[in-house]
Amino acid sequence: MIITHLSLTNFRNYGRLELDLPPGPTLLHGGNAQGKTNLLEAIYYLATTRSPHAAADSQLINWDAQQTDEPIIVGRLVAQVETERERRLLEMRLIQEKNRQLRNGRYSFRREALVDKRKVRLMDLLGNLRVVLFLPEDVQLITGPPNNRRRYLNITLCQIDSIYCRTLSAYNKVLEQRNALLRQLAEGEGSREMLTIFTEKLVSLGSQIFARRAVFLTNLAREAQRLHYEELTNGGETIRLQYAPRLEEVTTKQNWQTTDLTAVGEWLRTHHEDTAQIEARFAAALEQMTATEIARGMTVVGPHRDDWSFLLNGRFLSSFGSRGQQRSAILALKLAEINWMKQQTGETPVLLLDEVVAEFDEQRRTALLNTVSQATQAVLTATDPGMFTSKFLRQATPMLVADGQIQVEQVIA
Image: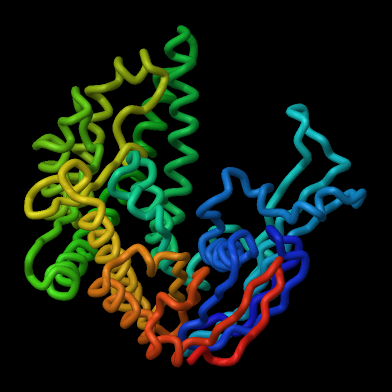
């Protein structure tokens, strides 16, 4: 899978860009704040419909375009994607209408997705372009809050598993409706019969999410462990991914890190094909927590509160690992993600690396660049090309990025 051409209009600091991308590694280099990361963000956004950096999608629209008197501002991201079987033209439109100001003072904003020039639902864009993104802040998957790890699960799985993505979308809608009803019941209003209906829907959808996450994390853990042990630490350290599905409520913050939810995760790993048992356990947990949920006005058990963690030599990496060990674990995770996607689809995803090469020591940098060199297509950013080996630079296509303009250069010797 490769992107042969990328077109950006009114996206970040790119007023207009038309760029042919070759197979193999492309090295974007230049000073800070020139547009290197923005180009990676555009590719990632086309693949996932999400930004790894922006708090709101409206922030992606070019600042200069927003200062004009035009009543409608449109940001466009278009990519020509080729696989072994077909070609697809993918497009995302970010549309801001200045003549429709909302009550909060903001302008009306909407997104549109197109495949081969035909409008589709946002979730139908997913899977047409698959990417793996490396960022320096990926270490927050280990040290950050659980929502970072759930986001990672959802974005990765939705690029491959359309059933998971549709189920997740339906689950989130039912969850919102159920939470609204719980708040009504807390105020002495609402219907208990409707709560039963929403609970049954939540159980059915949530059980599918639990099962698919369990399978994914099992496969990813196996490959990450192999890579980490054999290629990154020369057999010196082992890592394990531990799933903590919120199929039950916990009483203390640390319980999920001891026995409660990790034991549930092991149970789910071995019972992921038994939908009836998963549904029964989830339904029992919701019934047990009904009074608590009404009091809080929110659903307290379910996949929307899942978590997972890394163990290094049997100890929690978030608490006991050094920064270098955490980076190694993340590298193993990302390399495993690449291999998993290739196994699932038969094609290597496009690799996106934003200033991450400098984060690793020589051994891990070599392992990473070997993977990049073998990829069908990879796009890397760096302020200093000198951190790369001569061998890698001879393989890469260098491009200079300056103030939203990109110039293809001769191969750096």
